[in-house]
Image (cartoon, rainbow, N blue to C red):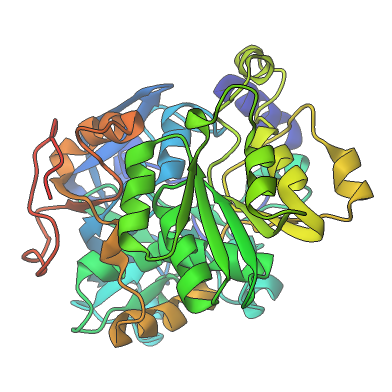
Amino acid sequence: MQTASFIAEKLTGRGTSETTADVSNPGNDAAQFGEGGEKMLALVWKAKGQVEMAETAKPKVIDPRDVVLKVTGSTICGSDLHLLHGAIMQLQSGDILGHEFCGVVESAGPEAKARGVKEGQRVVASFQIACGACTYCKEGLSSMCEKTNPSGLTRAMWGKQTAASLGGQAEYVRVPFGDVNLLPLPDDVPDEKGLYLSDVLCTSYNAVVDTGVEEGHNVAIWGAGPIGLIAAHFALKQKKAARVILIDAVQWRLDWAQHKIQGLEVLNYKELPKGDTVTKKLHELVPGGWDICIDVAGGEYAKGWAHYFELGLGAETDTSEIINEMITSTRHFGRCGITAAYSGFTNHFNVGALMERGIRLIGNGQAPVHRYWKELLAQIQDGTLDPTMMLSHRIRLEDTAKAYYKFDERDEKSRMLKVFIETKHSFPKAEKTPILSRVPIAYSK
């Protein structure tokens, strides 16, 4: 898949960017992008199914609005597993992974300083790079920034480019347009909470808001990982949905969610009797169909043999099974939102049901972090939102590669739901958060 994407990129050409893009690892050209021979530890993608820790060049300020952070906290996201599996195109061996991180400003370019960035400041980074000045950025739709991603392939496949992203599972990271893409963290918000404003909190909130969850709605959510958990919280506790059900095949994740969110319903589709389907069960629970269905699981994981082989043969990049389940489980003229990562094309899409039943299918897009993160920060401060409800482990950066494989297993013994990755720059552990674990690990309450 990666080889094909490189060929396609050559054919489609490259666009322009208002920042120095494509610096996925400063060690690829340390003389140009590295900080005077200094080294750092980072997690890098090597090949499909293979990531490893590596020593590479520490990044430096390149453009006037750049900021270099000492990373004090990072994490592993479900979309990182898509990268591990090779499901997302354009990765090259040696690329630094990780798009959720917080840190302390070590250095900043002159324009970043002039715009208010201060050395020593605690900040959380947006997982997307936005310029802050293009049409979409001005509308608060930072994930659709037109000025930071020169990829010709995304324009060819999706009609237009989206914002670029960063690699923050490292000791240091360079953040372009740092005055736009960094949010100061107040003293009363520890890294173990503020870090998750980078992606998962905003993504979960966007899934609920953009799909239009309102008071009294019945809401079904596919995927009981961190985003599904937090989306269920927003739908049930903040938007006052009448019923919310989480659908997954991993029982401990469903148990975790029910323990954290009172009133939440769950459905383990692997435990359904032979002949039953998710759609049939959902219609039994809510005759006529659910008002809102949201996919936070993704199209990488096939349920049936047809999609399994088509994915394996490259006949499609994503399975349509969950999307079809949502369409057939939703009430007439209901809404389905897709927040999960889909990268290309799918087969067997039930377009007839979509049209005939008047279903509104909404691509939620990559969440526009800048639109939501100040609102969600205020919720953390007033206690309305506690991101630690999803936090299961604290690990060292040195163990991140091992944690990828453990996270991918989703096994009962470790129960790894969401990790906090500490570096040599991290602050002492916040109260009521997990103690440091070494990988391999077993979960303990």
